[in-house]
Structure formats: structure tokens, C-alpha cells
Amino acid sequence: MSAAAGAVIDARNGQAARREHILDAAEACFVRNGFHRTTMQDLAREASMSPGNIYRYFDSKEAVVLGLAERDRERGAALVEAMERSGDKRAALMGVLARFFLDITREAAILRLDVWAESTRNPAIGTMVERGDEEGRTWLIEMFDAIKTSPDCDPTALYEAVAPLMQGIIVSRALNAAYDAGPAVAQLEAAIDAGLAGALPLSRLDPETGR
Image (cartoon, rainbow, N blue to C red; front, side):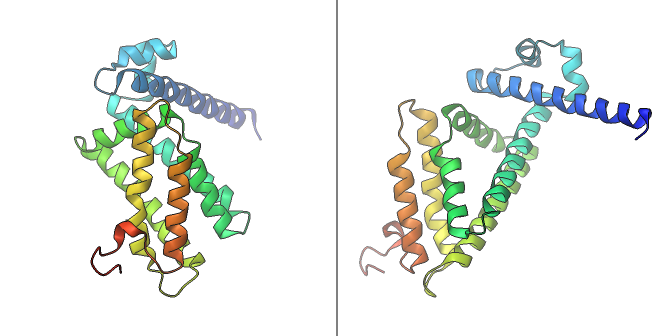
């Protein structure tokens, strides 16, 4: 590798590190103050950088939010890929569920809620959230189909049944500092097991027929 090429790589690595530093600062600001109360000057102070330096990497607060959403999506994809390397699809599924819902920090849950709220107002952020949600939905449905234990299992219906449980865990974690996600995650896993066996969770059953 030439010295010039090495310098270019070092410069790119440095830029990537500074972007990560800014995103970390933004995450702290957004969790503490919310998107709308946080200014680019706040981000600059949190990152110990001048506002001009912040604008070299992100031209607006919306761009920062999009950067956070994209980073979250990439991290989720990397986690899924790492879990799948075990070759045990069920273990991979349960591992992903544990990391996303049992181990989620309150700060991460608060940020997720803020992103969801912002996605209802901002089309660009809404598109990013929809993309991530669709990727997660597709992966889960395909995983359910791969590990179902009964031909009566409807992977798409199972996803629709458990999606509110997953969202509820994140909301509860964000709103309650003392929230213990363990029982809810256990309920989620039980609902998935029931669905894989061809029996949708009770919330999806007809109260009159029991089916």
C-alpha cells in the first residue's frame, strides 16, 4: 500500500470515528432532552466540538437522527448475523429476542420511542423506521417458518400476534426505570412457542369459539 493510500484510509477512519463520537453525543442529548429541545449547539457542547465541526459531518439535526437510526439498523443486522452463525436457528431467534428486549437499556428504549414519535412527523425518518421495521418483520417471519413445529403454524399471523408484545416491552422499559422485562420476555417466548406449534396466542383467539 502506498503512503498516499494509507493516508486516505487513515483520514476515512478518522472521519468515521468522529461521526460515531457525534452520534454518541447526540444519543446522550436526545435521551436527556428529546429531539425537539436539543439544538445543534447542544450537540456541539456534548461532543466537545465547535458547531462548525458538527456541520462538517451532519448538515442538520435531521441528518443526525437519520444517522442514529441507520446505526441502530446496522447494529441490529450485525447482531442477527452473529447469532445466526451458530447454525441453531431457534437459539439464534431466542438470542436476538433476549438482546433486543431483555437486555435493552432504558436509554436505548427512550431513544427508540423518540425515533418512533419523530417518524410520524418527518417523512425521511419515517421511511428509515419503516425500512428497519420491514427488515425485522421479514426476518422474524422467515425464522418462524424455518423453525415451526406444526404445519398449522402461520408465520405471518404469528408475527402480527407478537409484534404488540415486543413494542410494549420497549415502551414499558422507557417509561418505568424499575421495569423488569423478564416476565414479559418469558410471555413473548411462550407466545412464540404456542404459535410455532400451530396455536396462536390467546390474544388472537376468538373469545366465542376459542379458535
